[in-house]
Figure (cartoon, rainbow, N blue to C red):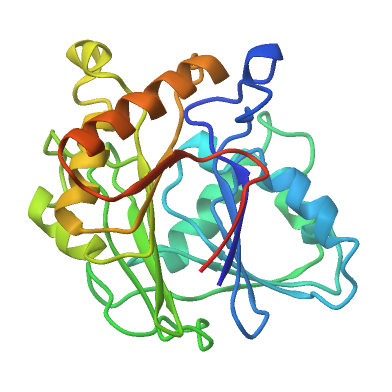
Length: 287
């Protein structure tokens, strides 16, 4: 499985001279299975760049979208996704339980007047709405993920809900838990122990790490975790690599370097061998 990061920032786009190294685009990941299937996770502002790249790949016409939730920073790139306007593309929109109807509604709403000048109906790609799960936690395959040994979801601990995902391709596991607050109970969210179990033994975990401990005093209940929360989860779940994700829009490149050093120091003091890094736009990983 190959993972390419097109957006790792949280809340709002943050371009500028202080975010050049880690990037300022909001959440968007590209996954390529060992058989070449393309899966896109979330449609943040980074999706625009992925769309431009896909237009240069004539052999790729089938795209599966997995959407964690419908807050603006995770959907803002969809109206600018160039393949969606071309009839030769097949786009499957997927999410957690009961997403079959809600995804189409949310995407259509953000492109309706007066919020956007181009209506969703202008998009000429063939859309299907699948991969809806029959329960809060999906075990085994989701419809449309036939190349994966497993694709499972579970509820995020986040205002207005959402879903995290685990992808297993030929024995290698990638877990994506953005917008997940581990130290506060939101409606529909799970206990911390359930997230630990979901991440157990993952080769790579991307987890929300938006706040410092000092910031969290003022932001508890906003739907995001601290750096300390993320590394403690990774340790308890015995993951191999931890990618700090959903960077605060006010966090500069130098600030992120400082937080990575803090996390690595804490892991070293605890005697735990977890490869910890801050996820960056343009990053490519393979497991």
